[in-house]
Length: 317
Image (cartoon, rainbow, N blue to C red):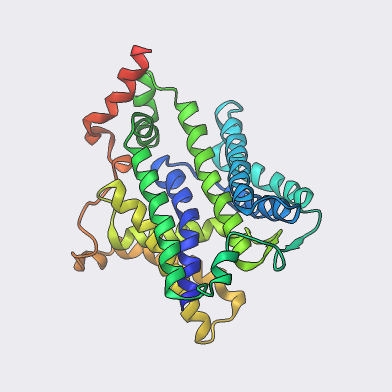
């Protein structure tokens, strides 16, 4: 179970990235399936080449940022539908990832990675490693929370909520869309790099279907905790990632065929979407209040006053 907790917490980084696009920006970004593998491939190739694993992980995040920018440019400047733009980038990244790795699989078992110190101290697979991963992810979560409360972050929230309204106030929604896609895929790619070092290999197919996992994490977490504030909504994404991994762990432990994992994930997402509508989760007030929404999900006529701040900045410039 500790291994499932470790994976769930690490995948929380990916869930934060998915949260930024699907919940804050309201953008259906399928680039995730490709950028996750891009991060893993970039980190693995650099580590094998002798680059410091921390530098390799940062570079992997940068590769994800580039992937997000490409999707954003295709959508905003090319006028391509957001869903199709993500699919096009995802497909192209398959070939890019093969070029980066040179083959379908790169082993890292004999290489020094960011996980090596934990293994040498024999704390990998213990509650100490769980605490270390959780602390790191929570720090990242609070950085994301802080960013979303800045003027730029408020502009991003407004872009996802009502693009026409915030554009009329002087905010360049193309720039906020591209920036959010870049940040999201940067987080996803960094997660891919960490997972590759955790598992000891990078594989060309490791990102296939990952967007469904990200959606399951975000939707399950917010079905339980709601999204009254950004702090709760982002924490719900991480919690959902851990819950998802625990569900898969126990399902496989009690006889689930690994070939059925995707179907189970789809059923989990459907259940998380339908149960709140049926009012079942409202019977647990300690977990979920009625009508909880993050600022980025408010109806246009209930948008809080701080949204006007970016417009003021734009006019002053």
